[in-house]
Length: 275
Image (cartoon, rainbow, N blue to C red; front, side, top):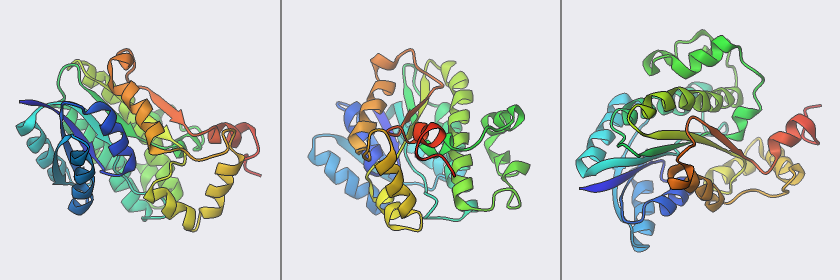
C-alpha cells in the first residue's frame, strides 16, 4: 500500500504544494470538475508522479466521505492539501459560506478521522481573513468548534448579518484558520499536524478572474502598494506548504502563515489603509 497525498482543488496552488511533497507517494487529485482534476493529473503524471483523480463537492458531506473512502483504499493518507474554494467575484455569500467555511470544516473533520500517524495537512485560507476586524471570543470559539453541520446556522452567518460576498469570504477565511487551530488538537491525538497558509494575490486563473472582475482596480492597487510590490507565484506557496508538511515543520501545528507581500501590513499601517 502507498502513502497517499490527497489534493482537494486541483488548481495551481494545490498542484505546486503536491509537487513538493508527493515524490514516491500516490497523489489523489480531487476537484469539483473532473476535467480539472484530469488536466492536473496529466501534468503531474508526465512529471513522474503516480496520480488518481476524483470529483468532489466539499459542500456535501457524502461527497467528502466518498473521497475519504477512495483515499484510504489506495493506502495510508499521510497528507491532505485543501485548496478548494470560491472567491468573492465568483459566488454569492451563501455559496461562499457553504464551500469555503462549511466545506473546509467537513474536510478537516472527515480526513482528521483517517489521517495517518506522522501525517500533515495544509488548508489554503487567505490574506482576506486578516483584514476582518476582531471578532468576540465567543464568535471565535463558535467558528472554531461548532460541529460542521451546525455551522451555517450560527446567528453571525445569517443573511441579515452577512450581506456581501467579500464579507462572507473574509469570515470564511478567518473561520478556516480558527478551525484549523481547534482541529490541530484533535489531529494531534493521531500524531498528525495541520496548519493554514493565508496567501495574498497569487497569479492563478482565479486571481485573473478577480483582476478582471469588479474588484480588479483594488487588486491592482494592492499589488502596486504592498511592500514587495508584486503578486506571488504558486511555487512560492508551494515552498511554505512543503515546510509545513515536511520534517522541517514537525513542531508547527495549529498555526496560520500569512504570506501576502505585506498587503496586510500596508492595510493596517501603510498606504492601503482604508480612508
